[in-house]
Length: 215
Image 1 (cartoon, rainbow, N blue to C red):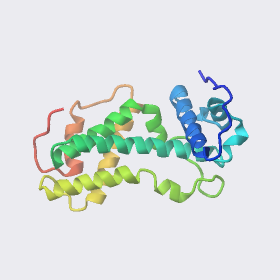
Image 2 (cartoon, rainbow, N blue to C red; image 1 turned 45 degrees about the vertical axis):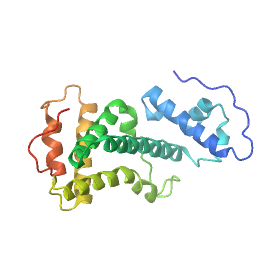
Image 3 (cartoon, rainbow, N blue to C red; image 1 turned 90 degrees about the vertical axis):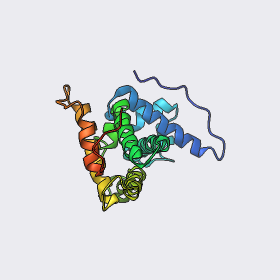
């Protein structure tokens, strides 16, 4: 149920960034609570944040701009989860497995956010009818994709992957992980097999060892 905050006190000078963060937090909360991005409107976000709707326009030109900020926030969370997983891995091969499983875990733990990040209804026109630009869209996920490429390059240097183009193989790995995450979210009974991750990840990452690390 959408619960509006009491009207907030006016920000002091220099606190505009704080209000912007509160608007984004309100939009994320609405998305999580409703599990429907159509619930994230300028009016509902303003009500959730405890501000008047016109106050939003000082920070966001329109609803797609708010949703872009929500998506950017979610992708930053995903990148952080992948980086933490990579840091905990003991060697380059383990890093590939760790970030791949962290990606799938993030999608499973935040299904609504994940659907919104990749192909949600919010996707705006980039023909001038909204404030979101083509460059905004191209920049989405660059950090996470770059991390995948770094890890595959490191695996190649260590001799545990025969990737000859880590950047392109990172795209292939990302698409494979996304496809699996999407199927698990969209299908009531996933057809399997149970070891699909063990079958898919080594091939897409072009790992050279046949054995798979334990879960």
